[in-house]
Image (cartoon, rainbow, N blue to C red):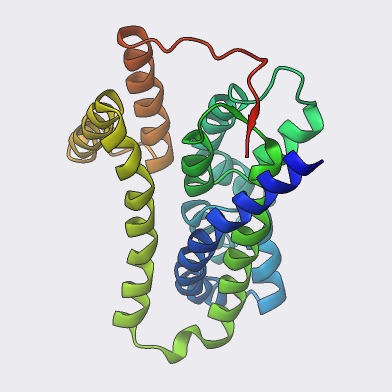
Length: 242
């Protein structure tokens, strides 16, 4: 019990800067939600169930186009498909005896940033660490959208744009320490940046969604890195990281 409690507290602490970044980005997203006709409560629920800016932006765009629920489901699935890969990767860090219930709820709360801090934990991952991060970060995302609907149009466009950049800076802050500690990780990060830029500038990939591009690059780069620099399996008897 103490282990779970400590893991939860550590996750909550690590989730505080993520929540702050989420609030700023979701605030600007709330403006789009308002244009789509959502009220603050609807915006809150939407963000509580859909934890991705690209996914929500696609959702609001579909609503504006008055499309069907099936179209909306397909668009959101394609836009957020990268989280399937993140969930599979993160599940490998759990103890083999971790229940399907824990795996399900951790998968529900996966975001780019929560995945980043979780995958960077040394040793076996305690799901309560994710619960702590989710408890702090996800309400920040949801409340940001709701308040953006209420007051977003009051702020100048330049201020809203500046707030949106905050999340990218936070994500960079997550990957830099790991890159400094491990040269292989650093090399993979640089290769990922270069490959992502190359794909974004190649007309052949213009018809693909950003999420699909990210997913394909993730599988390709991760597969090559795993083949060239395999990591030894950690013993299941290792203690959960707190």
